[in-house]
Image 1: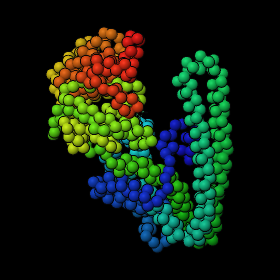
Image 2: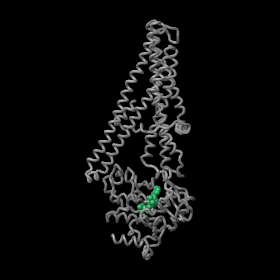
Image 3: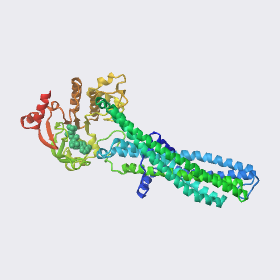
Image 4: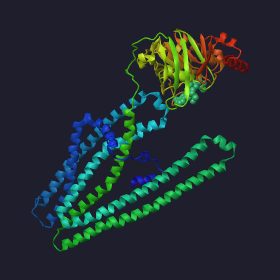
Length: 610
Ligand SMILES: Nc1ncnc2c1ncn2[C@@H]1O[C@H](COP(=O)(O)OP(=O)(O)OP(=O)(O)O)[C@@H](O)[C@H]1O
C-alpha cells in the first residue's frame, strides 16, 4: 500500500514502473540462470538458509510462550510442552529471544553479502557482454534503455536476492506454522478463521490492485505533463518567438488537472479500501475474540490460549497480506532477468581483452583493399548502402573519400574498423582477407580520429593514454607535443592533470581534436581513418590541427573522409562516392580534367564559396 500511495503523490518511483512478467518455465529459467551466480557462495547461502529457518521457527514460539505466561499467572496449568512455572517460561522466552537476535543478525548480513557479491558478478558480466556486443546491437537500441538494464533491472534482481526470496520463505513458514498452531489451540476457532480469511484477503488484494492501476494512470499522466514542461523549456526560444506562452500554459494546465482528477479518483477508492479494511479485517478479529471469549466463559478455552490464538491469527494475516507484494516483486524480477539474460546470452564479438596492453600477433603493413564490397545495415536490409566498392590503398598512401552526404563514406570507415561486415565482397589487409585476422589485431592497428571527438570524464593525460594504456609519462608528453597540444595543455594550471569531460574544463573543438590526434599518435596504427570535422575552425586553430594531422599521417596509410576539398589536394588517390558507388577516382589533377565529373563540380562549388 505504501507504494501505491507513493505513486499517487507525485513521487518518482522508477522501480515500480518495471513491467511484470508472466511466470512460466522459460522465465523461471532466466531467473534461475541469474540465481546460479549465487553458486560460489553456496555454503554461506546454506548457513543463511538454516538461520532463516531457525529464526522463523523461533518466531513461531512467541505467541505460545506469551499465552503460556498468562495461563501460568492464573494457575491454569495444562500438561503440555511448557513447564508450569511462570518464571521458567519467562526465562525460556528470553533465551529464545536471544537466539533469535543472534540468528537474525547473521541471517540478514549473510543474505546481503551473498546477494551483493553475486550481483557485482552479474553486473560485471552484463557490462562486459554489453560493451563487447557488435555495433548492430547498439544501432537498434537507445542508450537510456540499455542503461536501465544495468541499473533498474539489476536493482530489482538485487531486491529479490537480498530480501524477497528470504522473506517469502519466512512468511510461508510463519503462515503454515501459525495455522497449525491455531488448529492445535482451538480447532473450532481456527476453522472459522480459515473460512473467513480466504474470502476477505483475496478481496483486499483485488481491491489493492485496482487502486494500484489507478495510481499508475495518475503517474503516467504526470509523466506526460512533465514532457510538456521539458519540451517547452527546451524549445523556449520558439515558444517566445511565436508568443505561444498562453497556449503552452493552457496545455500544461489541462494536463495537470487531469492528474489531479485521477489522483482524487484514486483517493476515493483508497478511502473505501481503508473503510473496508477497518470493517472487515478488524471485524474478523473482534468476531474471533468475541467467540473466543464465549468459549472462555464456557470453560472450554483458557485466557492465555485465546491470547495465543489471537497472536497467531495476526501473524498469519500479516504473512498472507505480504505475500502478494512479494509475488509481484518476483514477477518484476523475472521480467528484469529476461532483459538481462537477453544480453548475457547474446553473441559478443570475438574479442580477447587484455587488462593492460593489447598485443598485436599479426602485423599489418597498411595495404588496404576493398574488393567488390556490398553492404546494407542489418537494421535496414532494404537499403543497400555500398553497392560494389573496389579500391586499393598501398601502405603509406593517402586516400581521400569525397561525396555528398549519405553516400556511404562513414559506412566505409565502419567496415574498415570491422564494426560491420559486408554481405558480399571482402576487405583485404596486406592482401589477406579481414576474416583471417583476429578482430583485435585489426582494431589494434587501425585508429580513427572522428569528427566529433568524445573525451571521457578524467584527466587530459588519461584521455591521451586511452590510445595506449601502458604509455609512459614521457610517451604521453611526446604525443602531446607532436599533436600541437602540449602548449595549450601546459597552459592550464593543472597541465596534463586537468580534468576534462562533462564535469571538467570545456575544451574547444580544435583542442579536442588535437587530443584525439595525440591519442592516435600513441596508438601508432598502420592505418589511420580521419573523419574530417565539418564545422570549420578559426584559421589559427585550423593550422594547428592540420599540422598535427600531417604529423599523424606520416608513414601510415591514411583514409581521409573529406568534407573540405582544399585539404586533400595532396592525396595520392581521391575516391568520389555517390549513392554507394565509386563514380570517379584519381588524383586531384586527373579528376579536375573530367569536365562532367562530380569532383570538378564540387570543387567548383567550394572554390566559389571560398
Ligand atoms: N547505423 C545505421 N543503421 C542504418 N542505416 C544507417 C546507419 N548509419 C548510416 N546509415 C545509412 O547509410 C547511408 C550512408 O550513411 P553514411 O553515414 O555512410 O554516409 P556519409 O557519406 O558518411 O554521410 P555524411 O557525409 O553526412 O556523414 C545513409 O542512408 C544512412 O541513413
